[in-house]
Structure formats: structure tokens, C-alpha cells
Image (cartoon, rainbow, N blue to C red; front, side):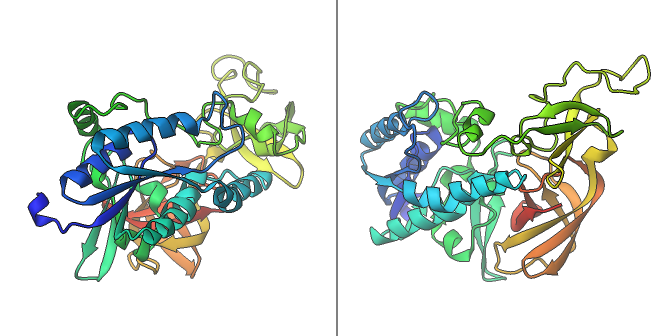
Length: 371
């Protein structure tokens, strides 16, 4: 394979995890000049048990040593705080549930990191994302496609990437199953071959989410009401809840006021609506309550991989990561907004999350759900 690939200078984002490590090894095997970059995106309480980039950097440096490449430690914490974390807090303060990983990809990994790599003379950058890039000669566009491992596909998080970013990016592990990536890592003796996949956002890590938000957003308690308008509890602040949430409501064992005796009166409660104007949290019983189901949605701040909205109307969409693609009708209502109608009702469609559109395995782009 190396004989057919043009040698290029490729800067790889080494996170300390196994996916980016195998990415770097694969590229070096193909004959490229590979340079590793470790991105430090968070500095507050970085030495805590929840989020320590120091450990990740040690792992990344050990990987670089085994592969035989240089590694540079670059601090993007100021960019991250300005471009990602500030927006994260703004969205939560307004009662929405943002996805900072999507913003981090668009603003840090494929903007600040890409710019830095180009200053190093890179021809391409590469990351350990499970996605693929294909150039379509018929359209003259780079397509963002799902990773081949359906259980690990990360195109949802990359849907805001544009043509320039995709043209300069490689996703080697997107062509592999995760089991194959682990096998390669063990076979070549990578020190992090068995390292557990990271979960959550770095600045939150494994810590209780509400505890973290508490440090930045003031609590504003208010009533919890059921679908009959009865007050059945008190919430700690609307910012601390998300639609579809079942845990942490403090009303788990309560019987619904007015509920009939017998079956279903102790069914689990779910967050169904957040009334910011009246500081009221509305909850319902049962996973399939009508308030939790939506046949349509609207989204704004649209971003399209091809640079323009799709022309097809019969597409598929995800309204949250790991959701099965849902058949939908796409209607572009303005340059930066759109609406979707679904063949089957969608569960807990959440403002602040992203609605991402697909045509088969091609990720077309998406927008931020507003309602």
C-alpha cells in the first residue's frame, strides 16, 4: 500500500487513546512523515481525579516513542474557553442542552489545530475519529461518510466540518472496526493498547455533571409539575435537567396525584418540558408519553458539508448520538435553518442538541434543534 500513497507530512492529533495511536502508526506504515500533536484544551482543576491531561500526555508521548515520531504539546485552553466552554455555559443557562464535542471539533480540532498544523508545514492532519472522507469527482466535493464500524461511527460529531477542513483531513481508523484497531495496537506493542475509551467531555470527565455545572450556573429552584398541572416536587434549576432525563429528579417513588389505583401509577418519571418563563419543570410518567414524542422539529445555525443545503427531501436524521437513523422529510426554510418531519415519532427531541442529516452513509450536515 505504501508504494501507491504519495508521501506527505501529516500531523496527527495524539490524545493518549488507542484510536489516535493506531492512526499515527498506520500513516507511518504508509510512508508518510508523521508528527504528533497533543492538544491541551482544559486547565482548570487539571490535576484532579476527574480530568488529568497530564496522564494522557504521558500515554501519548509513550506511543510516539514506540512508533518513532516526534510529539509536540500545544495548549489550546484559551481558545477552548472562548470558543467552546463559553457557548456551552450560555446554552445551559438558556435551558438548552448543547453538545460541546461538536463545537470542539469545529472550533478547536479542525480549526485551531488545523491552523497550527499548517504552520508546521503539514499537508494533512489526521485524528482517530471513526469516519471517512471521499472525494466525489462527479460533484467536485469531499463527502463525509460514516465510519465502517456502525457501533463507533462518529460522523454525527463531525457534521459541521466544511470542504476545506475535509480536504485536509485523514481518518484512517474510519476504515476499520474497533476490534481491529485494538488488535493492531496489541500486535505492535502500543503501551495504551488496552486503555479504556474516554467518555464524556474532558472538562467534566467522570465527575457528577450537576456538581460541575454548579460551579458556573446559579441554582434557581422552582416547581416540578406533572401533565395534570399538579406540583409534585421542586427542581434545583432548569439548567440542570435535560429532556428525557429519568435519574436525579427526586420524585422516583412518588405516585402521580390523581393516578388510578393499580398498574402504572408508579411508572418512572421523565423530564418532558422546561418552561423558562415560569421556571417550571414538567414531568410525565411512562417512556412513551405523548409529551415525549415529536413528529417534527426545527433547527437553526445550519452547517452543510457541501456548502449548501441538500436538494433531496427524503433523507434520514439523527437527533442524538447513537440513535438509529430515522427516515425524515427535509424542508429548508432559510439559508441557516430547516425543519424535519418524521415518519415515526422521535423520542425526547432536545433543544440544543444537533439534528444531523444523512443520505445513506453520507453525512450531509445539520443544525441546532430549537423546537
